[in-house]
Length: 248
Length: 283
Image (tube, rainbow over all chains, first blue to last red; front, side):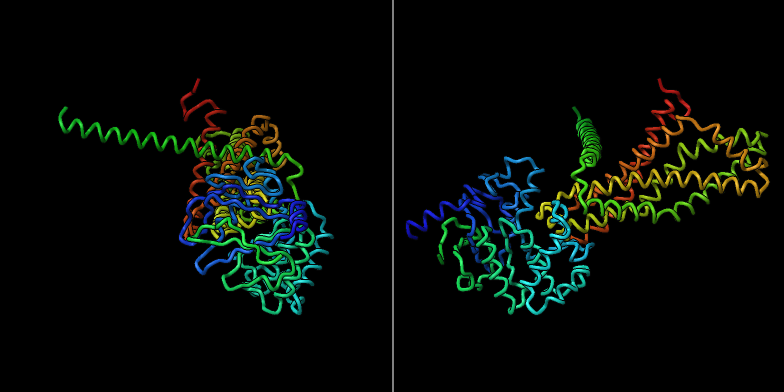
């Protein structure tokens, strides 16, 4: 990295900062933090390649402040989860978009109500939400726009998984999150829509969002994303803090 | 000490240990329920917590718990009203007392005891178990985490509107039940020739005998009893640990625990109000 690039990097604000974080031992699929230190600045994309048996659920819970680490600090947008009152945690989490690998929907609501839920709860106007959903549906659905729009009035159980995955991506990005936590987002996404999704990620990172991308081991993101891409690796089920910059 | 004495002491020690642990556990549960009720009231008083999704949840719950329960409540109230009036007719004949004496007694037992209890039973049976099951399903299928991850406090979105709807529903249904019981009672009594006074005199007698104390009894029994029941249903549901197969256990547990709480609260309030334990005066 040139001196000029290093200066630019320093100017970018830190979105997520983990300092000496150690997490509890989970089940056989869990990945752990052991004295982990790392950070994501605005515009960063960090990929974590998962092996077949890995599940990053416990890590994501820690990053979202839903579980406390054994030791160390996790800061999001300059605020530590442990330093803030729990009421402010919810406001902080509203700035994080998450794509779930597992259950992702409130089954008693329609898909549309699910997408609107958090934004309405955080006081965003209905018309603005509708505009955003429309915009991102157009961007992410390719030729499946009609199917996605139809699914908005149905309950999640009655929607095909690939269509539901598009809806999940729409929900994750439509509030212009500062941090995107993606847990194997391409798993159920139709191949033909990958390019659209990568372009959306490029656009969001260009606007200052940072992305932590947990991918299946065989997914190579480097060639598909236009921005900077780094990688955190996993050794013996422990996330390593040595960051590898794959692409600048 | 002989071995048998040691054995006896050990058994007694274990028994005391069990009693103590059970007592501490019960106290801790009551404290948790009170904490949830306190938090619910505190959160409900903050206008910014009443976001559109929370309002929708409250209205949906109120519709399910109160409005949809009206026919069932009226059916039960009519049946019990009928039973009461038959009993009253027997007492009137056996003791030779007049309707004017009996009507206020009936009214007081309906308003102070029967209507609040019956409303709680209807709401627990119809909605309490449903709330517990729904929340337990949401918990075990990861939906609570979905809410948390999106910055939605489950206490505000799931628990607060349900408990408030529960309380309001019991209060309103208890009024409907009391009125239905009285009307049915009068109608059946009149047809059986057990009540011989005109309807306006009968209801005038009742209204003359209504006092502020009746309202205090009615309000406290409906609001406190239902608050406890609602909090128990939500707590049992949301605190489930394990797989989706544990959910049916929650639904049966919720009903029993909520009913127990309602009966205990009702009995305690009666003791407090009447200052009597059965026929023994306290204080």
